[in-house]
Amino acid sequence: MKAFLEKLLWNSRYMTLLAVWSCIVGMALLFILSALDMGKLLIEFIDVYFMGHEYPAGDFHTAVVSHVITAVDDFLLAMVLLIFGLGVYELHIDHIECARDNPAAGKLLQIESLDDLKDRLGKVILMILIVAFFKNVLHVKFDDPLNILYMGGGIFLVALALYFGHKAGGSHKS
Image (cartoon, rainbow, N blue to C red; front, side):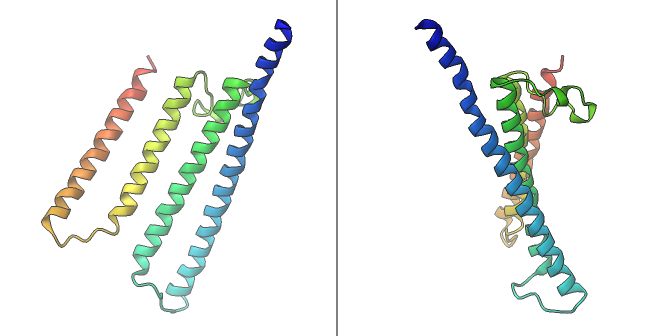
């Protein structure tokens, strides 16, 4: 009975494959959706700048920048899903041999421990938050000196987060 229970518990780790495949599907959907959005934006760009049509929603430049930032945000989220899916697989199922033998895979997708996974995800999530911050900055009106001060404070805090993120990442390499 004990051997059966232990085997059942050990093999239950394969349930994590649901999370792995869900992350891979979500990643693929985000990559495809963002790429399609960029294709639509390219068509709108050609329509406005080369065909001479008016853009109905106001400032086209701001709209383009906002769409591009949204796409970058979606691509980064897709990367989070990829890193998480591969990390869960490597931690709970088995090492991905073709990634270990391939120098192009780099160290980003090779997860050795839960802390490794947490560090890699944390860095990408920090980038998502920075991108979201700059997307919101596009819509700030600088008609009040306090808004300019808030923007400067926000930029300082983003720089500080990047600095400490870099410092924390560097301490694991020694």
